[in-house]
Image (cartoon, rainbow, N blue to C red; front, side, top):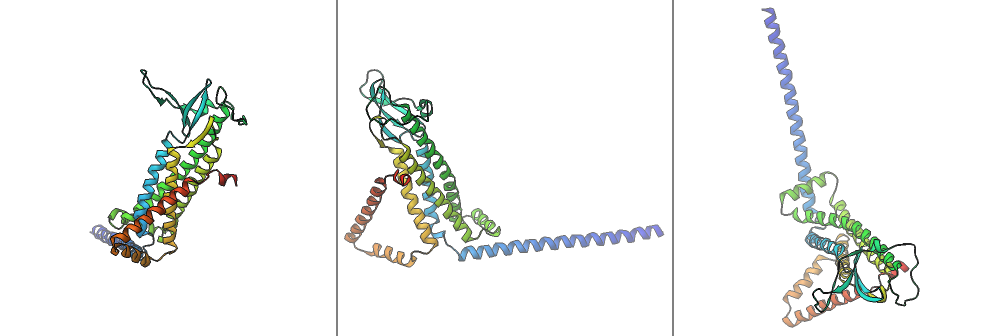
Length: 320
């Protein structure tokens, strides 16, 4: 009987200890849950009262995705420059991409006209990459291989800069999209709360977005300048012209320049939102003739901007 009483008392003591441990664990769990809720509520209040880039997040997301598309098209494009090359004593129209060249050939079945054949690797056409460029611009039987080496080097540098600028552009698109969607979707809002709880405040978040845009913009500018500087002025006969893929990158440069300026202006409060709203309201409430004048002035401004970028000598910054 004494053994039974002793075992019962021991069991009771162990049960009380286990109950105490369970109560302590539940108390710690509730405390951690309350702390997490407090952090989430603080993040919600901080995000709600500190919009910063929220107003331009949709524009930043759309333009970044558009720039990603345009850069991808240019990387895969076949027409960076065009010129006339010499092959077996005959001039041939040729289009050059970042790593290949295509020559014009007659249409099959006796049809009138030409088409561009299969791509030929610039690296394979470059026999000696240390060979000097020909000084005399006199047509020869074959285009000097040093020209293909120069084109291969120019394409490699431009492609490297574009890929390096492609990555921060993707990051900018993702962060801008998260910032935009956090106002509408719970998943994006929770992800933003988690970032704030991890120490990435609105100021740090905005700085990361701006840095991604600036790095991508600088690398795109370096790509255009390096290609304009390293590309030869002739393929063997006449001058070269920069074509569609290079023009696509120029358009991307314009879009990125405007976006970076808008983001910097928003962060550093370079303009007053009330003034912008007053200007927009004045435009909406104006007469049709005044709206037409405003539209013509905006169109003229866009055309002048496009002409300015088109007229840039991209090799000049490298020469300086």
